[in-house]
Amino acid sequence: MKESLFELITPEHDNTFLEITDSLEEVVLFCDDHGVVIKSSIGARNFWGKDIINVPLWVLLEIDIANINALFTKHPAGRTSSISLTDKGECNLWVMPIPNVLAPNGGLVATLTPIEGLRETYEECIQDNIVARKDSFKLFGALFDAAPDSTILVDEQLTILSANPAAVKRFNIPNDEQNPSSFLPFIKKSLREIVKSSIANLKEGKPWCGEFIALNSSQEEIPIMLTAKQIRLSDQLLFQLIIKDLSMRMELEENLKEREEELESMDNTLRTVIRSVEEEKQEYREEVIEQVKEYLLPTIDRIAEAPSQTLRKSYSGILKSHIEDFSDNTGELPDELLSLSSRQLEICKLVYVGMKGKEIAELLGISFETLQSHRKNIRKKLKLCGTNISLQAYLENRTDFDPS
Image: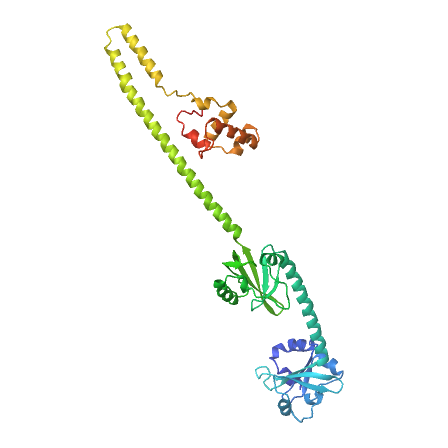
């Protein structure tokens, strides 16, 4: 018998096999090819409380048969069946032949599980699952309610199981457990099939999102970003739907577009002003050239042709007078800028070189509000109030402004 047991595995693993079988607390029986017990686990020895080696398996199981073949006929291999023992009550029996590669001379293994112990185990597992499920719902609920965006929990039919306060407030979702509502009516009708099929095809761990039109309780259309995630609470497949209201984003986009149009209009106005200034500068240059031709050149010729020193001095005086008349006053300030205070003139120079408001205020040791007050008064003196022209653009286009 002992030699048959060792033939159940390869010889070099005999010690390992003995250690494994002696560590089993379940009722496990190893039998030879005739169905006679040749080895048992600790659990089996404790179960019967006596030596069971060399006892036929069917005798131990109190089955009225004569051989191992009859046992397999009554209790097919690989299937769990129920038997009743006098002192142990109802038990589940499982019998399986050991493959020839492990037992060249044949053999089988049988396990026995008392129903009473199994029932207690099942009850403990069920209770543990109930507690775990409740804990899962509590944890999910805490995160669920705290979400700032509208969040809805639905089942596979998209029936609303729960909605957080944000969703209830935004979409007026009824809290009626007896008559739960579907999520789909909250989506624009033409988009419902897309939402339905996209959620149905979700894979675990892979969220899906898209932009849609939702309907509130007043059937007003709301642009939304819908994100769907597949989650599993215990053995139930659910879907978490996160609805982000895009109304504010679209409003900001519209405001940005209006601002861009306004800036473009201001840019066109500034270009027109610059073009006008350039035209005035060109006209001024042409006027200077005409005056040079009309007054300066003839005077120079007269000086060269004058026969006497006195006459040449007279012509020189006339030439100097004409030069002073159409001088561009380089280094001097125009009348508008002369009306500014020294502090305002200093601010103009810093604006001209491109410094920002906060930088100027910090450099001059004044508050930003005081700087803004100065800028307002400067624009008023330079007659810029009511125009879209910036102070920097104005100064840059004044050919007679000297920032040094």
